[in-house]
Image 1 (cartoon, rainbow, N blue to C red):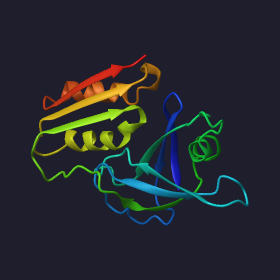
Image 2 (image 1 turned 90 degrees about the horizontal axis):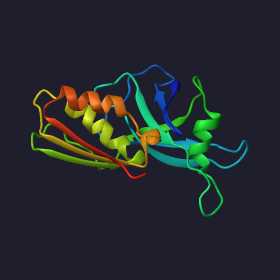
Image 3 (image 1 turned 180 degrees about the horizontal axis):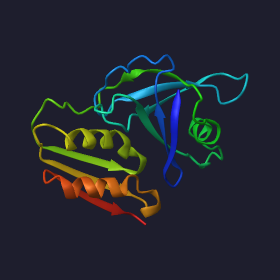
Length: 178
């Protein structure tokens, strides 16, 4: 069930999710994703899409995914599912989701230095990793490089700046291409 829908940046919206039955959420590793099955056309076929978790495993009372609206590209067709999520789904709506999965994740039990690179909406799995590294019991040397088109599309700008200022072991380099 969608418990909160929050605009994060231009055409980028976070959806906070909790189980409809009130049971505890399955755990996950930072960087994993959720698989959604939705019906964007009433009476039509279902469509499946995967979205990275942008929340940290430390936030076990909800899952968060952050989705960017895909505008019409060279084919003239906008992103079917991203636009359905942003335009049609609201707090209180239910969506079908599979448990978190994926092989691209940060192992929080390791202590080696970490280099993370993200671009645009590709920051979502990396942000979950950074949030985990921020609160780790043993600080890991962390370097994060983030590129985004402009300040309007820069996700979590203030939260990232605060994280870098408050955590000596986390160093960030951000660049805008426009």
